[in-house]
Picture 1 (cartoon, rainbow, N blue to C red):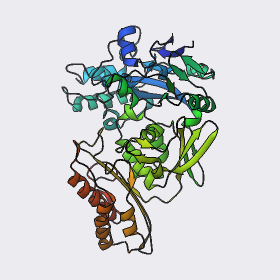
Picture 2 (picture 1 turned 45 degrees about the vertical axis):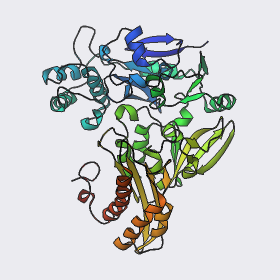
Picture 3 (picture 1 turned 90 degrees about the horizontal axis):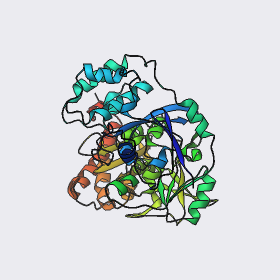
Length: 471
């Protein structure tokens, strides 16, 4: 039986977990007695359990804030973890982030403070100063964010302390081990070929990419998962390849990395990703998982469908490609055979005509009531092509075929848009649920098409009060 190895606050751990879905949070608190990492929501929302996970990405040392409550121990193999107990020097000197939280009165009850501190520590190591985004996944009910932001700005001006740790050498050594790892009830393949062959023989296994969805099966549904296969070691699934034809994105690419790769090509897609969960969630969640779970309210598929993306599936050594929109068959059902997995997504190169609109009760870290994405091509005043896709309007992410038909071939005008808005009634019969009524969804979805038309000729500041292009 194999074992996993990782760094914890600078000291190596070698484990053979009896339960492959034991969370890092439980391990820290119950085995290591590192109780500074708190259990709050236990579903990746509140940020009280935030830790820093360091790894090599394309040979570069990166640091990611992540939620320990939905990270399984095997996901840490070959990585370095730092908790709030591991920030100060051995002689008790505080890290600049800790010092600033004290001097700027950034804490009251203290329950959320360790997670906030770890988010700011991670930002400090990476030089990030977009603190509203950095802290969107950390909820505080007591202090209010003004003193916390002040602390973040004060710390940002301070250099790294002389005891700052460099995990790169250990991580590079760990990366040299390219052998498969078998645990009790789990498999950690070292190559895509090894995974493909194993999964073809074990089609009922649970695939874990980032665990931002599967993690809740364990922490909320209390499910026992076995066998489980972990994909974080598969560097081929984490590649992003740009060509003249487009962008090939591996299924294991996280939402954080995808946002960076897409921002210059399609900035509205990048803005949509910025509102996907929180920094901690985006650092773990993979685009392949966002697609493969088949959620009707996943934010990735509508944008990718509007961009004409295709999906590559693999079974053993065999692959097949399909338009992304055909992958979704019905609620909870996808065109994926037993033992077949999503290997990559291809986004064809094209001029940027994409606009994405997420409608939710909160701007940050909320599930969409509606997600509408539009790409309309206009030549000499006439619509020559249109791709309109929605999440939250049907049992699957879905194109609006009647809406597109009403646009293509017509003059790009308010009259045409009004007709297309009426045609949208043929495309969708939305439902009412806790996030929105059917009537609201139908009206809001149609209005988003008019918003797209307005934004095609007006500054974004005319329609956006927050986010990209806002005044």
